[in-house]
Image (cartoon, rainbow, N blue to C red; front, side, top):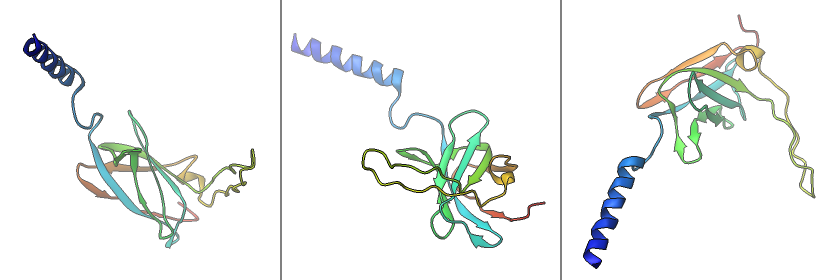
Length: 141
């Protein structure tokens, strides 16, 4: 009887793995890093969003040197392979200030609307490693 139970349990596990898959589930991703500059100067603390026509948006934040790296989810780096609309923003709402939490002030938008609310930016993500830089201008054409 125990051997029969063991075989049944093994068969159930095999069927479960076949139905659910194993390893990382989800779309194929590629790593995306790059630099964001405004008039040749690095843009710190900018939120960078890559949005495919279908699927989840990948997001990154620039460091003090204007360098970003996209995250697809908490545990998966990168962006979906293919064409993306891109938004870059420096605006942040104030947070905290409730229940004894310190108030973290927000920040105003430093970039022209053509890079965020009315973005015309696009990018193509290819399999593998991608370096996609954006050289922004205060007075875009």
